[in-house]
Length: 119
Image (cartoon, rainbow, N blue to C red; front, side, top):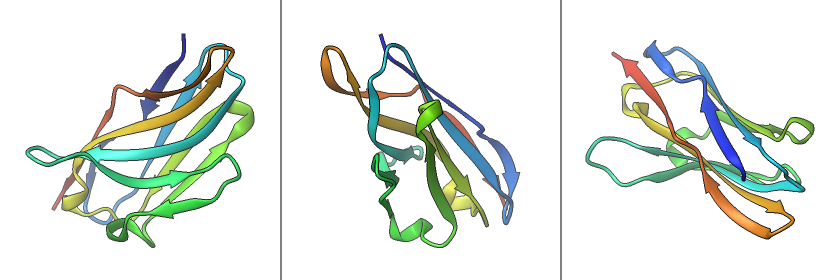
């Protein structure tokens, strides 16, 4: 059984920073591509940032230059550093990871962490 646990969310003023973590646990061979998504009330879930096992990254236009995704493969953990936060960044943030186990490759979702940016 694989679990993804996000942490690091909270309440911050506009212009502030937060660092989210997504840690995978279980009997894991490797954590491959990982994406950070967010969902604001009344809106669809959207991809914010993604990183491959080789550390190639991609970002939504709305967060380019403000957010940085990184990973520590030894810890099976992916981070999302969020700087210069704006009220429109307020959402529940989820990580999604493609994990390789002895049963093959499967996508997993974390439970989400709330990020609230006040103006």
